[in-house]
Image (tube, rainbow, N blue to C red):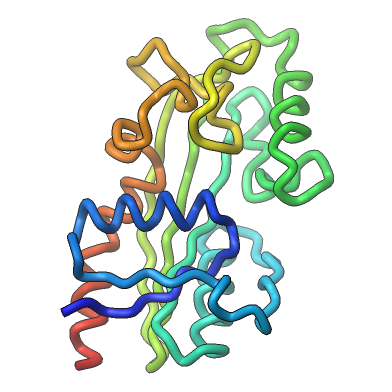
Length: 205
């Protein structure tokens, strides 16, 4: 038996990533549906001041709108030398939501005079579930590494081409999707939340 779960995003790259990770954790148990099945719904504005608030806002609004259990995440890159920026504004740091190229170039420009030893950074992801009965669950994952001086690799999206995971000599964008899932902030958050999600879904009958 599989349980229907709404992923509160229209980002196709993220939908593919969520499906791949959840299928590896709970094969055949979750039928993940995206907002493309609800064309009348508008994307939810991320008005929170933390990753957790934004993830909960998206999950709650879409669960209320559809009557389905909904999962969402908010994630971003936090750069030590930039005092945690881009932070929760990661996807729109350069002024346009989802403009990966502009955001990536802005990080590189901001760090152009920063030496390698001071280029530490981490990705953070908070995954949030909202149930139709009002229950909520949140879990966090982090992915530590450093920022390169120029992009390398074409897999993934966002800041992956300039992020070198701790202990590796390749960027996130040079890793296979499955290898990245095992280490990434989103993979960690979803592995942490998945057992609680399954318990909540089963409780609905």
